[in-house]
Image 1 (cartoon, rainbow, N blue to C red):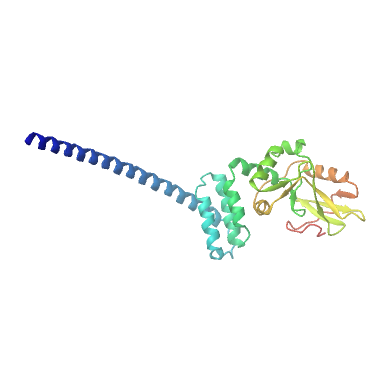
Image 2 (cartoon, rainbow, N blue to C red):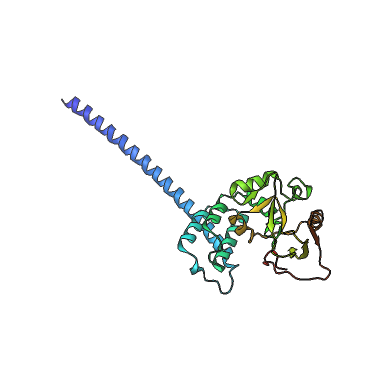
Length: 265
């Protein structure tokens, strides 16, 4: 009996020891998990604060961030808190600043699409935006295989990738056109004005093979970029070859508001 009790006691002790060791291991696992969680949440908070600080620098004097919808701001920070890349943070900061300056400027869909952008995607979209004529509302991509595009970050591959993300629509073998309100359209490429003139009976003009989606257009408004050398001449040459349309610089220097609507000449 004493031997049996000792055996039982020993077994119980061993069981208790195993349980204690397991608890220690569980506690250690929980401790490591807690430390990882704290570190992760700290990184997210650092990202949020970095984006917010960058956005504050871009606020208009009369901006009132409290006018941003609660659902929008919650979704924004939920998506942006994992962004640690400096350049990507700048894009998120511009979105936040513009939404604070003009509540409703960016849809939740646009925010969600931006959240899916890789840095490479963002660079491809920025390259595309170098070919925008604001008054026509689009980036003018007439032939995605031309060197002027390929040498400046735009190709069939980048266009189709941006289409899959939801930033552009691609016409493939076709092309898009835009109805013209008037026969004379005044546009600009950065600071260089262009006058388009349509012959009688011509009611639309080709604008290339790529158009922005709503989300793409919203994002294009905050992209900061620089002109492509020789693109102005490329555009002039293209339209001069189109039946019923002429394109030329104005005879005198004029200033066109960047936000002027197509056909507002």
